[in-house]
Length: 167
Image (tube, rainbow, N blue to C red; front, side, top):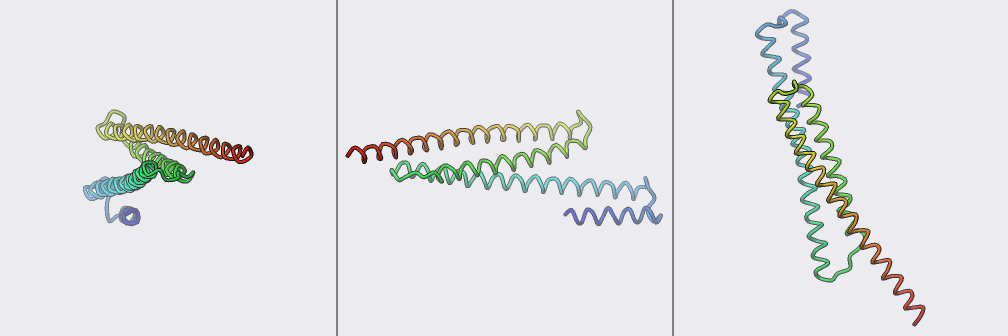
């Protein structure tokens, strides 16, 4: 999509420079409108890509949470990896949310403050900020859970060693 936009823009520049299209003519304005539409489509595709990545990471995270819950319910051994992978996924999700936020900020900067498009992007940025905050809180809770597990495992290992030494 970016390549098509670049090609179109370069062709327009060539035609303007050669005098085929006059700057500020109806043809020129039509071409500018087309460039704007192509840029909007490119931005939307980029934002969708980020959202798809975020949604996929969310699905993986949910699957891992469900797997951990099932392990706990069965009384299976919980490993450090069971806590580490959700933390890694939460980090990836936060990174993608920040990328999406940056893209929205770049797009918002094109428009005048107070314009409908500017406000629309402001709302989207606020939504992403809420998602980032929620993901950071989830990450913190996962980290706390993992730390509790590691402490309990260390305690159990120390208890086993003491019992072995005493016994």
